[in-house]
Length: 86
Image 1 (spheres, helix red, strand yellow):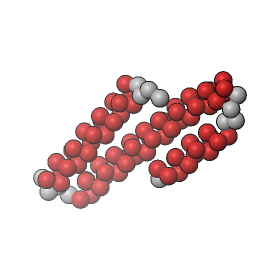
Image 2 (spheres, rainbow, N blue to C red):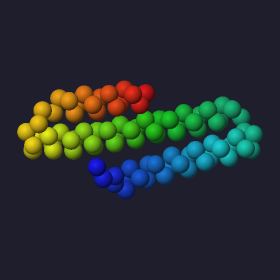
Image 3 (cartoon, rainbow, N blue to C red):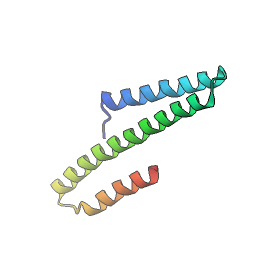
Image 4 (spheres, helix red, strand yellow):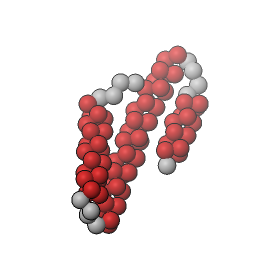
């Protein structure tokens, strides 16, 4: 699977968010604000995982269909990846 610019930009934004959290910690900012930012980072990570798994699943199912392979195992594997990520 190739990762497009949009996915890479999501990761870069998350990287910036986490650097901001570290900076907040170093500055001794309130823990509520830090937790808020960490929660936002976690949400961004979860959404990115979902996007990557869904795009990969689409690609895998299309390839399996072209090759005449049963797609049920591919779908189960994608669901397991999503469950494992939580």
